[in-house]
Length: 296
Image (cartoon, rainbow, N blue to C red):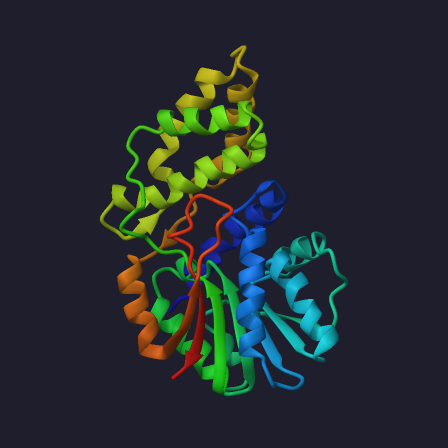
């Protein structure tokens, strides 16, 4: 019943693979995120010999991290992705040669068709709940089914926080990040990504569907790009161009998300929350908790 959603997302994911090298945190894991992931994974795998690990997706930063466990603990890593193109595109961005790694072609709501029940020690995933068309219960059911009795799930989860900004006019936020780029605090790419990601989370408040999408800011983003296209202000011109060349090509992408309290209530149906960590090297940290979860 979920194939239509994933099939409609296939082409969008391919576009994201093509753009990934231009995406910076929080759209992809940051240095702090990786440190937090490692701390939680170390706890999850303490005392486990030759662990079986499943990675939801092909995130290169997480594959590089998990390759350490493949080398040092003789782990086997299974990357669950719906397209081989996405997996191959992400492979090109790896810093380490993948070891003991296997691609499992599947959408995330059908992994039990490919991976045996209670055969996995750890499932890892970054910003995955928003990418299953609102079928978060189904996603967690799949994960707990493949996990062993004492298995763990470590994940950065995209949520809406009480502190999440509600943005109607995007111009002041654009000006703020352009100023930080001018002062040398951020690169053009970093400023553009931080600006855009804040819009993504804010967009949740612009509809009653509990979804995030840049489509709700599409007209404003296009107006902004036209405004600065021929400007003598090089920073704002380059930022506006960068926006349209990256996330501007993903305005049809939709993420289904919940308020943090509702998300944690749902988590507790399937897992015990052992620990929650927050990174400190990007803007939407309250919207991006990293959980260490133990199967109930």
